[in-house]
Length: 381
Image (tube, rainbow, N blue to C red; front, top):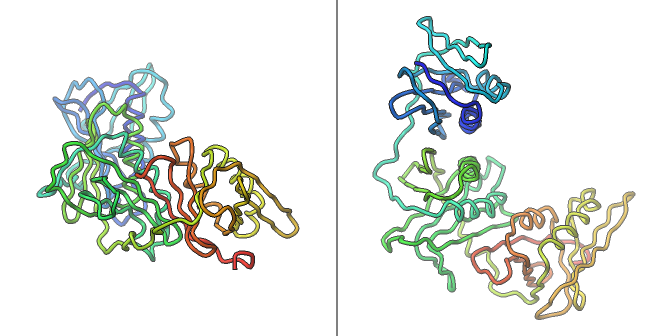
C-alpha cells in the first residue's frame, strides 16, 4: 500500500473517525483505524461495535492495500505533522513509513483480516432530509437526554417519521429527548416523504453527536440519507457513512407531559433572557441552581439567593399576555441549556400555575417546544 495526501485532509478524516475508537475493550483490535487504498481513493474506518464510521480522504494512490494503524498513536502523529504533503508506504515487514519533507515515522501495523466489518443496514426504511435542518433538530434536542444508564431508554433521542399525532403539528419528522426533568421536541416537514413512510426509533445520543459534527463539516449541498431497520440505523452524507445500533425499549409517551394551555405568556428577547439567566446562575449555583421566576406587570424578574454568597434580582422587559402576575421556580441550568440552542430573536415562556410545568417556544414558530418541570419552594408553595 502506498499513497500521498495533504495533511489537512488526513487530519480531518482521522479526527472524525478517532472519536468513536474505544481503547477500553476486551477486543483490542477495535482500538485501531482501518486504512483502505484502492482505485476509488483512500477510505478510513473505525468500529467500536456499537457505532461505526467510514469516510473518504482525498489521496493519490500509487499502490492498493489495506492496513490497521493504532488510533491513539496515529492521532498523535497526524496532529503534529507540518502542513505539507504526507506519504504512506507499507513495507513487507508490516511497518508503515509516514514521510513528510525530509523526515519520517515508522509505525507498526496489524493485518486488517480480523477487523469487524461495518454493517450495511438492509431491509430498512429509507428517506432523505436536508442536512442543515436535521443538524438543527439534533442541536435543539440532544442536550435533554439523560446521562443515567439506569434510564437507558432516555439516553437516546426518539425519532418519529410520519404524520404528527397532535393537533396543529404538520411536521412529518420529529426528534424528542427527555431526562425526566425537561423535554425537548423539534419537528420538520420533509419534502418528498411518502405517506407510507412511518417509523419510530430511539437513536443513541453519542451517535447523533457524531452525526452533528459530521454535518457541521459539510456545507449542506447534499442530502442526508437515513436508513432504519429493526436494530440499526445508518446515515450517508457525501462520502461519509455512519452506522449505529438503536436503543431497544419503550420511549415514554411525551404527549402526556406537554401542557394543554398556558395561563401567562411572556415574550422575551432571546439574547437578553440568556444573559440574565447566566448572571442569575452565578448566585444560584450555590443553592441547587434554583431561580424564582416572577411576572410583574411588563417584566419578568429572575431572583436567586445563596446563604453567605449573596442575592440577585434580574429584571427583563417582556410582553405579557394573560395573567400579569405569578411566580414559579426552575432549575436555571435547564433554562440556559435551551436558550443556547434558540435560533429565533424572541422566545415565549408559557406558565401554567405555580407547580405546573413551564413551556418555552421560539416566537412565531410551532416546530420547537421545550417543557421544563418546576421546583417546589416555600415561596411557590
